Image 1 (tube, rainbow, N blue to C red):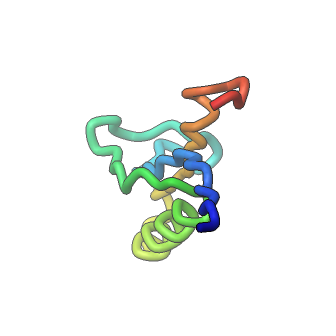
Image 2 (cartoon, rainbow, N blue to C red):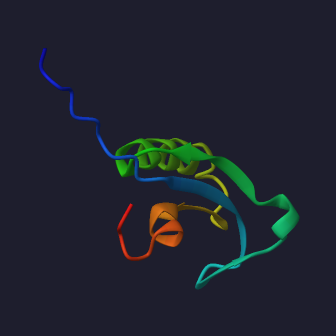
Length: 79
């Protein structure tokens, strides 16, 4: 029986909300920041980010971000 190699989980978080100004990533109200979700790959996170960004395109101050949480958890990349 062949061993199935598991794809490593690289945790990415997608968050967003309304910014105070267009030129800096500072949220207008932190209590209103939306947690879109946690994803095991960048590709999955990018799909979620794109969907939320497109859904809020009418508000120029809305921004969504992909956070590379796996780098925060293990900045040396050892696990």
